[in-house]
Image: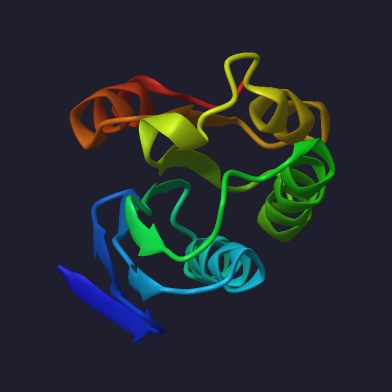
Length: 130
């Protein structure tokens, strides 16, 4: 297991998957930046799969549609289509239409959002680039 840089949490690499579980009271912008740094870390280290469990990031309300759009585009742009993202967030933060997921996929990033880590990990482990 290789360990990487950390901001609010530590990024670890196991095989072809990186794991990041940040925690703390932050702004939405700071939360987006933390996830984006993890995406960049995975890309730079040639790790194609990233699981981010952000359920312990608090201090901000559920993002509105423009905020979801810009966060998803940022992650997709940073991934350069080289990182698949499974994002675990609190259930009340998940948009029922999965708008951010659609934006990320339209921008070239295979991504999905989940309320629990086991489901996210199962999806990520079977996910593949097409």
